[in-house]
Each structure stands twice: as C-alpha cells, then as structure tokens.
Length: 157
Image (tube, rainbow, N blue to C red; front, side):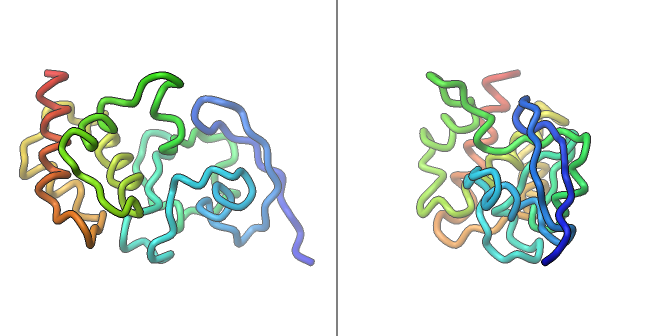
C-alpha cells in the first residue's frame, strides 16, 4: 500500500486538507478525493485543457500537477466561480453565445478565459485565440467561445 501524504491547501477560498498518494494528480484529487467533478479528464496528458484550473494565479492543466504540489497553495476551480444565486459573467456569456454543447471542454475553457481576463482584461480576438489554443473542443468550433470571451471583456471595459 502506497504511503499517503497530508496536504493542506486552499480551494475556491476555503482551507482544505486531504490525503493523497505522491503519484496522484491534482485532477484525480479534485475528482476522486474532494468530489469536485467540474474539471474533466479529457486526455490526461496536458493536450486538451478540459481539466484547467488556476493554481496560485496561474493557469495549469490539473492532470499534469501532482496533488502534493498544492501544499500551501491556492487552487481555483469551476465550482468556485459562480455565487449561490448568480453565475460568473464568463459563464453567463457562454450561455448567451451558445458557446457550449456537450460540456466536456466547457469548464476548462471558462477557467482559461478567467485566467486570461484576470491578466489582460481587454484582449484582442487574436490574443483570445492564442490564449485558448491549449483548449480543444470537438463540438462548437471556436467562434462562439471567442465571442463569449470578447463580450465579457467589452462589458468590463
């Protein structure tokens, strides 16, 4: 039996403690240990972006980060964006622009868009497309997703 490590971190603004094996990815910890299933496992090798989260203000693929690496750090997941009675503006824009279909990639795109807008509140269409290049979608194409991010940027300008 593998030895488990005790990890204390902050997830969506709340202090969280968990036990995990040293080989467990953050994605596995989020989904299997903490039951935060918003981040999706698409490829499990960092190519699709479906598992994107924000770790200490930086966008990461949670399948490529070990759970033990989050000790003392801050993690933002899709579950932490909306308020109890109100969606985050990015989530609203995705709905308004029909920028989602099957939903596998949507949490990753939304977290990627949030990380972009946190660092650059008024990106160009080119900058949005470049930033979102690490996220793959097989359903919507990308125009509606880019339009949703542009709408949020324009609304906050």
